[in-house]
View 1 (cartoon, helix red, strand yellow):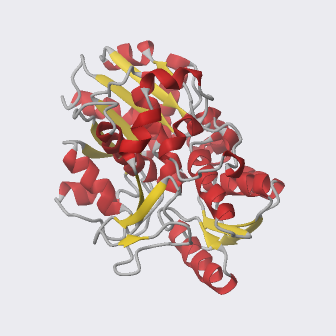
View 2 (tube, rainbow, N blue to C red):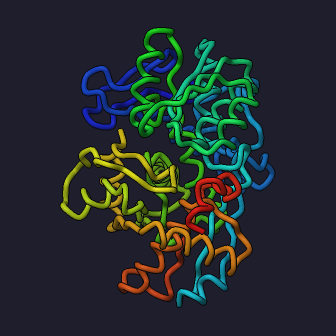
View 3 (tube, rainbow, N blue to C red):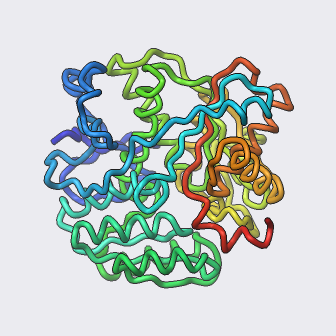
Length: 390
């Protein structure tokens, strides 16, 4: 198997691959897949990549699904890294790039993680998969479950936009709305998963979703000629993408693909739900539950991230920061990038534009630095939620 072992991200206890594991049985922390990177480096070479498929599976040596026939793929990954010169000029920055995830299957970056997670669920013998979602993860789970012939169960807050419900149900998933936030949906999902024996794909509650997300880090390096930017701004709810990219950078250095230089990682949150921002400002290793979480950027409305300590560790180790923005700033950031570059981004992407404006004004990003802003999905899915603010 490509995965040598699963390793706890806190206590470092190890678990054998090839069976279903969720959290560490000793401390209930997330598990990471560990690979034989020396072996992977023999074939995962820079000169070998141009001829490979233009999807995240081009990096198959460091992904958990060994048999290509077991990969449930809809063409996810290898999204464009777009130069944004007009936006950069407006902000007073020389090189701003946008990693645009909106062209992924089901319209968001969630396709990466769910492709890997649902593929592994099927490979491990699961018949049904489930997760709580703010919208995009649910539709992605449903699509890949349909691709693999698995039953899907999705639990969402009652105020989710109707388009997400329509799309997720169209893929054949069972969708249940829950009073409250994604944390409340998560409790319902976890209880029913245990009762029915469903494979739970909630953020970081199994080891493989983060493996799909980490491919964003591999792509950035490849698309930038095996260098990394100075700064990465990432919209942070559950934070799996940020955590995954940090893992990817470590793996790439071990394989000799990049050097020791790292970007400053910036976790971007909404003022109405900013547990990572608060914990970072206070120098805490993890983030307490955020009370009264509210934002129209529902992907950021995560009051307690299971991997909060991993997000905060990556931000600290990279000499990065965490920034919050208002609802008005999110909308303005969405308008700014649309008018400057022709990109109608998700509000989470707009939040990153707004955060970049703040960082530059404060002198935390220098004009000559290379900055990558992540847009995690298409703005079209959010029209119903964002229209009142527009």
